[in-house]
Length: 423
Image (tube, rainbow, N blue to C red; front, side, top):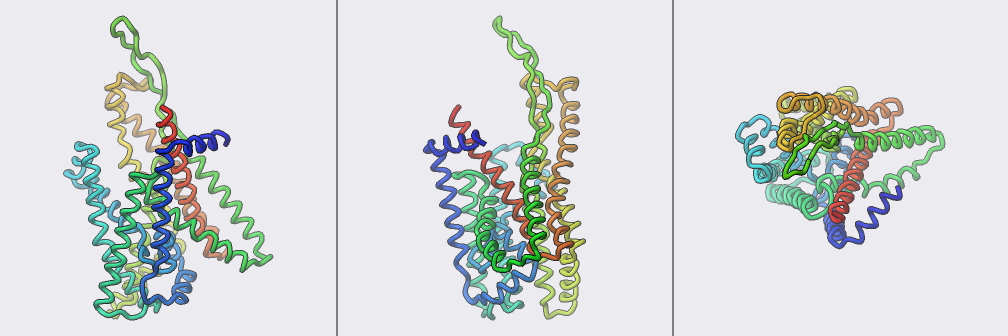
């Protein structure tokens, strides 16, 4: 603990790190200011009833970084950008030209794919803005809009989403931490005071065991997330001894730390994105004047609202996205080639294909543990809700998981900046 505070003290003594921290804070303040500006024609009472009575809209509010709570200019949050990133990463795995661009062009190729994700987020924002406005009108949250007013609101919401995406990219580049994750984190933290105020207002002594149980689960989740994020599987590596110019080099043994959870909080965000977008479309279809579309939308939305189906889908998506994101960001073959080029080898394993297979096997096993942990933690609040009947527990559990993971990542980024300045 003293070491952590010491590192933070060093961070605030370095002007470059302080500048990055200030840049991050300013970006988050601008986001919160935008989240406080509502679009015209909002019925606040109807909006409050809609958010409090529907788990789907509650999770969507978290996913939008709190921008949905008052139908702000940034009500879509970074959802369209995340959806665009998911689509591009899937295409990268399936389209050979995109895969070659990412692998052969290096940083330039990855930058081009990121640019494609940004461009794709614009039409996705437009489509989501239109569907969401129509959905809100059907819920009497928004007043009826003419053609020009409807187009204006769609363009404003789309511009807000693109602006928020830009702010997140700037925070990632010039600030500290992942800008997208920090925006979601800031939206969650911003509503904590209001939630505590509601908790004290609705205090009921008979619910004390429920409160205690929730606190215990929250502490266990925090401890578990910290342990899994910090856990590593060391892989012993030996460097071959070489003689150059009469001097001996190498011959030392070290290890490669393979993290148990290399994907961090990204699988949770991806899974929520995949779950929330179809629910929005189905909810919109259920309000359609066409009887067939309305029936399909109603049946589909009811299926998603089924706690068992929703929980199983959520768990499976988190596990799959953990493997998917690990496969995208970690390449065992490249690691094997780098080891071979530097004259290193794994004890008892032949260089080349055998090393690649060995690393793949280890990564697959440890990723299974991390994926199952994330999946269990993600659905644990739903299980708690099934026994207690308290809806807010499901929302709070997902938010807690994101907050802890983002804080851990932020602390590591600050520590990395301090270490880089020291060297």
